[in-house]
Amino acid sequence: MNYDEQLLQLIKNALAEDIGDGDHSTLSSIDGNAKSRAVLKIKEDGILAGVAVAKKIFSYMQPDIVFTQYKNDGDVMKAGEIAFTVEAKVHTILQCERLVLNCMQRMSGIATLTHQYVEQLKGFKTKLLDTRKTTPNFRLLEKEAVRIGGGVNHRFGLYDMIMLKDNHVDYSGGIEKAIEKAFAYVQTKELGLKIEVETRSLADVKKVLAIGKVDRILLDNFTPAQITEALQLIDGKYETEASGRIDLSNIQSYAATGVDYISCGAVIHHAVSLDLSLKAEII
Image (cartoon, rainbow, N blue to C red):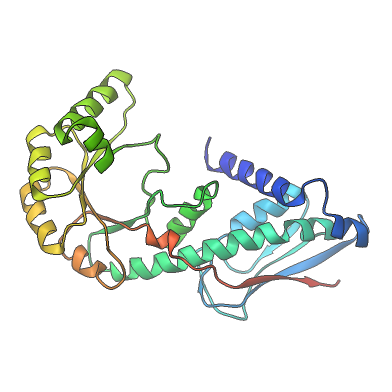
């Protein structure tokens, strides 16, 4: 499925989870034909994310909404600003409210933290990657938030890249066997998938260089000095990625080595949701 199809499925499932057999609070107190407007108010500074998703949510419930947008995904936002207004049936507004806020608050928190990491990489060639350390069934929007914040999406799942991690290597009987098996698999299946292999030492790097057959070498839990030494061995023959214990306090020292990518799960799993609210505006 493409992004739009996955988003539609996410919205459908999330609304079903929340509404169940009916939004009885709204059904019991609001006329089904009543229409009004709501305003998305920004209550915390950061990077805005999820406006396009909010529009999709409201439109899924009611295609003829009037959605007036004042800020875009990726914009710097300040407390007190308005992101958008939506005119729709009151039932639509109330039933979509929590899903819209959950998505936008979470996405804005991730985009804001990602932006902070990306700012640290200015002037370096290194790009920031996310990981699969995501919330189950919400990966689509968490990774979209990383993209909005200026990061680069790594693989979306187990299906779109071969990534031989430490456990794959150990279960396969060694790094050489893991690579040989993976390379043969890709050739036989004609999948066209890239192969990345995790290395845990300079000795591992030398083994990978001896066998080849990969596209990227992951340098896991290396110090900046060790990465510099590894990059000298690799000599530009393969893409390189650093991971493990890298945060805002030390990311520049890793980028200074010249590594191609730094992957950081913290941009998602350490992100804190930002404060937004959807308030009724009586018309």
